[in-house]
Image (cartoon, rainbow, N blue to C red; front, side, top):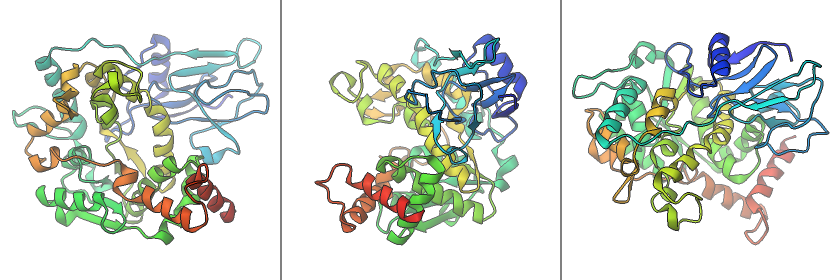
Length: 410
């Protein structure tokens, strides 16, 4: 591997991050910030940032007996790699935080966990909120009531569309782009479309809202496309990737080059139900809220390796304000009661929203369903699978239906 090709940062920034083992070097190329991470190859070294914000894939070799989480363990003489899984015949996801390079004999044996997610002690509540507000405001392009910093979102707004589902995350992203179109997708009567209409109306943005209504025919046709883009066939990943891809394609067709998304907010700020009472929840290993939130943050590399290719394959690039390094660092310093307060998740993020003029209370207090459920995509995939003869009593019945659609499309 001799090619120098880096996404998300200048090669000089990557070299410094590798030399200093700095996991959050603040890398970004221009405004608006893309994913703030980086991946690629430089100086005969492959790498992917600590949160895996820029995906990287290898062509799996026959002698590799390893899981994607562990990464390559053998010593091939050459390595084929790409930023999208569709560019490879048998893609293997490169692990986050890793550098991999040849030794003096040219064998690829130098695999190093160069970066790990930092461990931060929690700040006192007041200091934690101030730090978070000071990073979120410029990241989102939102001016605070106290006259604090605002971002430069409007400078590039003509190129940006917003994926909008009506929850606090997408509403905060939308607030930074007051002239951008807001796209929501879903089946008739679904939660996300209703929530998006209510939120857009409350924000005075109903005229910006563009609703993409799904049908069974559309759903069937998109399954092979997202499988090709992401390299995944399991029902959960497909049900998440389809809405993202459809919104991205519509935005691209309307002339937009960037899609702003709320990815990372749930993981960073305690948005999952399983973090509320982790000691009694089998879905997490940690016994504290902060520990459980850290576990969810560590799932981002796998999730982004699905979401980013799904969006890019549809013709636009990704803007993810919550994933900027300074925002991540501030989130890691939040005490538990600013992650979950009295059973309310994302407490600090709601406090931030409360202090802006851009997101009404009815929006930042609303509960939000996961994308695959709020759009009814998961429900309707299950319905189509059963109609095609893949009954629920069958093991992995929706996965098998997805696989059959891919096979039929070949």
